[in-house]
Amino acid sequence: MAAIGVYFGYHWHQQSKLIEAITPHVKNTSIRTSNALSYEITEGSKITYKELFEKLEADISEIDKRLLEVQTISTPATKIKTDIVLAYLNGCQEMLRAQLWKYRKQLALSSASKWFDKSLGLYKVVGYYGFEYARKTVEEALKALNEAGREYEEAKSNLVVTAKKLTEIRTQIASIVSADNLVDPNALAKVVDVNNKKKDETTTAK
Image (cartoon, rainbow, N blue to C red):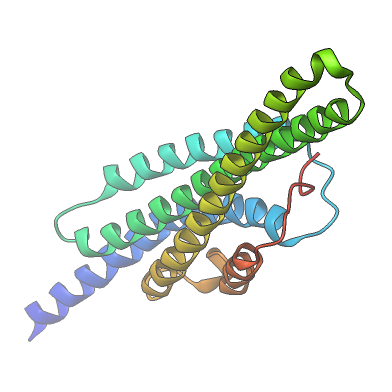
């Protein structure tokens, strides 16, 4: 009986050390992801596209380091738990990548919209000799606008799917790491709601 007690005591100690070691990586990743989600669900952000792209890319790179750290401390005895942690970190990273893709498509849509408006304006005032060229330009601009709109909606749909997957993974890791170190599920639900809407959102970043 004493030997069994020692075994379970040692096992508990190892698990406790594991949680202590992985929590900073989980918390850091969650903070970065939560900050990024705020751009989806908070009105009035003044961040530029350039600043937003740089921030998301930096956060994605930082999570790579966190993934490596958790992989390093994983052992056969802790693999089940570390696999869940790695899935969560990967899920957060995919969330940031999905946002980055959405914002790139959002910027492309904004540019296409401006080009269409400009070409349409010129078309309305062009003289006889420039009419055919102006007409073709408008047609090309409209085609580009429609394509940009399609890609933007696709990026929004991808973000919704990614947010739902992260919500599921969060439920699993909540049995290992305390909830205050994780992304708020309400924020993820708001991201899903916002991106399920079909209205244009090209003014999120300037």
